[in-house]
Length: 146
Image (cartoon, rainbow, N blue to C red):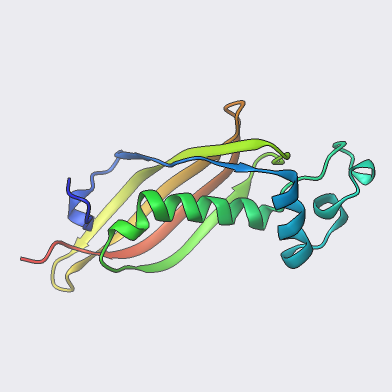
């Protein structure tokens, strides 16, 4: 596979590893102050039932998007997102390094349009191997030009 991807380069069941990203307490609090200013995200930690601030789900999703873009999405010459479903499985504590993978669920080529409907499943996991986020994404991606 070359650096540039097309939908027809992919196969159902194919796995694409994501990089990793560590969320510091400072990054969690800074993000939350701007985008999700709820005490569980901004502190003080004494007010948290977990004894610590936790990352906003929106921040966890943003980390996923960054890792997925770097490993996968930006390799396509174009594409259109159609929608996604997500489930937050566990809280993300400061110092957690997130990683994960994308798994190709299905590809429905549409040669007359030069594209394909692509569905992927993805997960982010923490240091302990526990899933913190599940994502299913539907997109339209280009087929290789002929």
